[in-house]
Length: 227
Ligand code: ADP
Ligand code: ADP
Image (cartoon, rainbow, N blue to C red; front, side, top):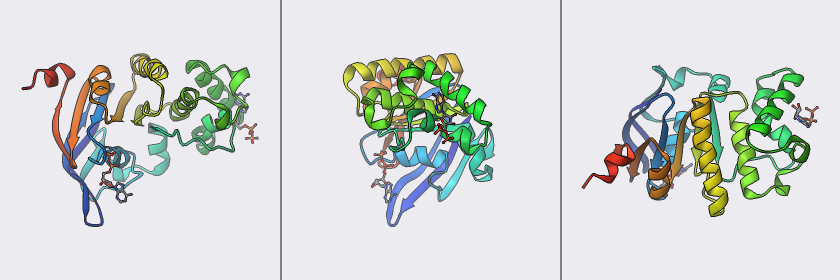
């Protein structure tokens, strides 16, 4: 469970996140939605402490995230961004194995895990393991990004505009796969999007942000009937 209590973040004189409180249940697929610049990415990045919050409290399973060390956070929380953030000079297999290697898993176990994830995400090992990111399509690269985020079996997956740069058909396929992952692996997923339709179609619950604040939250059906 992820909880934010009156969380704020300022960059210089700009308030990016202005006192938001929310609660994301275990196993939930939650969308953070709102127009560009409203504070969605900042909120996401404060949860895994890529950015430190400067007011309020963020808890993971009742513990302040400030108390978690870096290694524990990377193991428990997978993070996917739009451009995928793959290292261009590393092969697909090496990219996917990043976190397990940082965690010093034995080589054989890393290899097994990499192959398992490639299968799970529909990337045949023989065809893709030794390719480089530039040899992949947008959808394939995004899959590698998701595989990498899942590598150490985190219970939480944070995804920042994971479908933004994809063509409509690939987007739909990956959206479907995200739901499958959630259903099959029981992950808690928080994804950021500026696309209200996408959020309504995919999420169990939406958190709508505007100018650093939460202005609405609820299940799609509740929001659709909100006058
Ligand atoms: P969103 O994800 O909703 O597009 P962001 O969280 O990226 O919004 O940004 C919220 C606000 O914080 C914006 O005004 C943005 O310019 C500002 N901001 C975000 N990151 C930084 C940063 N590293 N330094 C300065 N300002 C930032
Ligand atoms: P090294 O760590 O010795 O530089 P490589 O660059 O060959 O090894 O591989 C990097 C990582 O990717 C390793 O963790 C390895 O287990 C994994 N890996 C490499 N090739 C494959 C493959 N064909 N299938 C699965 N995993 C692979």
